[in-house]
Image (cartoon, rainbow, N blue to C red):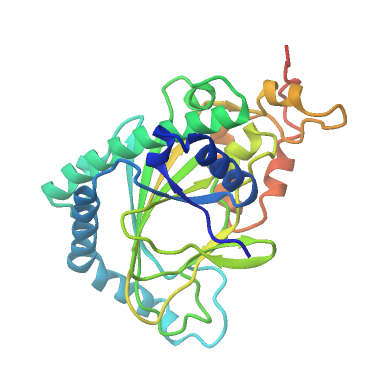
Length: 315
């Protein structure tokens, strides 16, 4: 199997831009994932985010997690657990309004650093969306506009830690799923691995790389591109040694954004290629996803094909 795609973001500014854009295109079409290096977020900021995240877990969440797992009996399971994940998490919301000041147990330095980190990730996500527009032949800003809704996009972060698991063969760190939203930017542990994606019916490791950002395609981009880019199933394998840090930031459509295949892409398809995906309000999709996250994505799309939206205009 070919190597996991790694994109050097700096090369977009030089003579290798065309080749780099081609690598991004190939990654979006054939992997649904790629890893970004030299992405413009300074190493010292990433180091501070990592240090504070790990300190916060040790001080505020580790004991709570152990007590929770013990109370659920997960440490003594004998058969595979299919309805729970071996992870400790909390969530931050950035857009349309931030909730960082309201999240309990965070020290002031951590709040400040995560606000700054989120702004940098938001900018990077929008840069990436415009690169995808360029590769797709859509006008610059199309994807951001498609996500906008009445109040702009939604943007949030899931901060997760995956502690050592005594029985990783029976409990997943995170069960297989696709991501519901738009584009996901992940800052992950560079020492403890665990993230895998499904490619050609095989689970492939997403390699931990220091100071990289892992990017993956969500269900909404699959719909907007009419399947040209696909969201890909992925999971986290629990490990017996080491706690894996995962900070995943989700740049998603606004709750009332109406999502549908880009008419311009439908026009470019061959005559026998039809609109494969439905039209729906993002919030409605998320309500369905909440019930069916760990099931196949195709029935979620099918459920909206009988909605009341009319056909998509292509002119």
